[in-house]
Length: 114
Length: 111
Image (tube, rainbow over all chains, first blue to last red; front, side):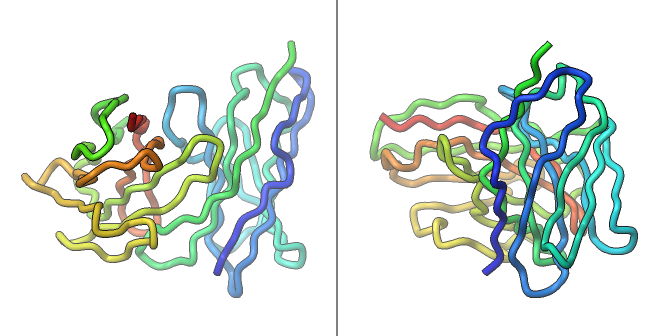
């Protein structure tokens, strides 16, 4: 069965600093990979996704993620964090196909200090 | 930007009562999903729905749960007899092929 691990439960960064959120997955083939963000009281918003092709994908709000098959990782990065980026971030994997059955990680809570 | 709308945003119900959670999908979406997130735990897949029938469901989605599109627009999740452990945030998602957009969720509290 597929699984997703987000090793960091809580990360604190200063505004303007760079950010990397880690995600490791377990799946036999090449999965579809996603990052979602959840702000307090809000739903899950898709930041970016990887299906195939270029392993570096660009998303909304200045985020990017890199798929590394050898490390089974899909880490999320942002060069300069803004206070509005404070939220919970979820990595998810899908086995592919038309059925959007996502397996989520436990999430990483991001705090941004001024 | 089109969005998925869920109602109510918060529902409190007594154990054993039936609840219906509602979702208005983005128009022209064909795939519908329910997920839930128990406080402090992962977001978990419950069920997917396509062409007016369940296409896949998880172990969580037992006989107490049902889904339907009663009027061709709303997509509902019914829990027949709620238990304390059903307390969670329930997310509806709708989409096309290999994509999905999530609603803001309904927080269900069973007392």
